[in-house]
Length: 98
Image (tube, rainbow, N blue to C red; front, top):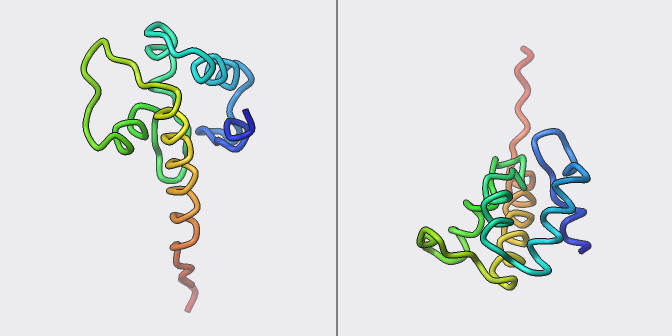
């Protein structure tokens, strides 16, 4: 999916394996894939994991053993991208030289 290509982890773009895991999760969410990807960093500024993004879009917490559906996962990815854009847009440049 194109949206996954725009995600950024701690070291820039997501690794190939993380990209493949997210694609598989979006195609068919399973509990095992959710457990493997929920702590993945999908946004570097501000630092955000997939689970944090999902919790933000559902405005609550997932029950243990529950997995988000494909639409919720997509919304979470989109939310993290928008949060990153706002973070960079609102950054103030300050000059510390005198």
